[in-house]
Length: 295
Image 1: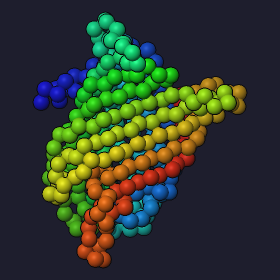
Image 2: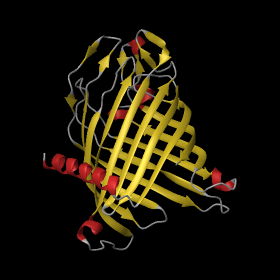
Image 3: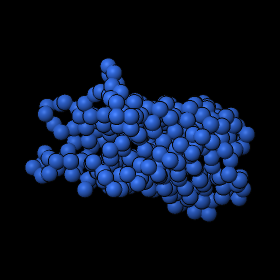
Image 4: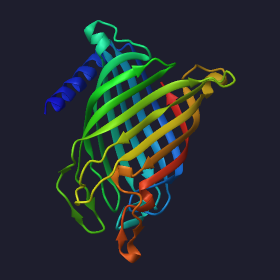
């Protein structure tokens, strides 16, 4: 409970401070598309269009990051048992506040390749209208982090996840009350670095997560550790064309997700033979096209 109170304090301090005294702020709208997304208990490749609104800002004592994704699936991820020709829709929200202990203490905590020592907290929230699961995830995160001394930034955090869900299946018309998984640790990397290729204004950015097992799921099945990373290589197209730098960026992206949501990808999904493991849908490897407009 102490960690949760601290997390609430961090979020409140971050939002209030950034609103009144931002040292920098970057807001952007993005779009990405891929045709090889995957969902557990679904053997089909899924096409998705994803629109995001993001903001990253800094203030005297740290940074804030906020992102909301709107994910639109094709019919291979149906909206419901009654709408099998309509794709599911999902909203996924992420907020992270990173508190600089150097700034708070007034003493630089820099050593070797470590630029700063920090405390990170935040939350994830989602809702999805799909036939099989209808996720309603809520998750709080908190833990220590370090910023490494590299061009751009590279933050490494050791976080504790407090996750719950309350899914409802329109195939079986059954659901479960909100279920709290075991608190579980995660190793997180977030980065954005210039790429020195032929003097082109390229940036390589994204995140990577290793998430430990969260115990039993809401149906009594054992979960397993998952590995998830989402990266992008973007060209500053506006700058190349003689316009303002950092306004319009485009390029490619890639997502890898092994044991998605803690489901075991090694157990096949074969309903015809009575096998209901998560199957290959719990292992996503998705190339994407991506564009961003910053304002």
